[in-house]
Length: 147
Image (cartoon, rainbow, N blue to C red):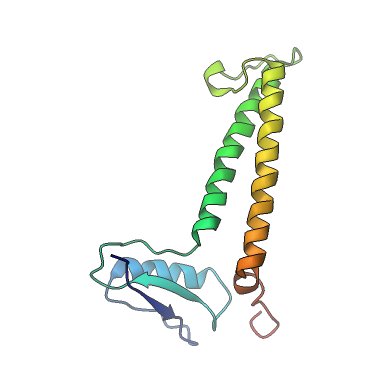
């Protein structure tokens, strides 16, 4: 059964938005205070009593590309530490369990493979954001009246 959602709009005044559910109230107020936008700020909240207590702000594609980037950055750091360990100039060594690649050439291969993963993932995010209107909807509404 799909969750029911309602939209909550921030009033033009500086009053704090109140809801029946205190967690939703806190989350919405945090979102509102994080932006200078007083007219457009919206968020989807589950209807009170639904089984899904989470607030969904970003579309699925944005969340997936975010987590791919997060894992790729961890792999970049781990392979970079192995590249660092291969240098005879430095006395400090990272623990072998925190590195990726096993030796210099292996670490370089991992590093460049993850570089391509980050590049392709970034292009997918840009293409999705352009085609879905994510950029227009979430980044373009800034104008002189709001600032």
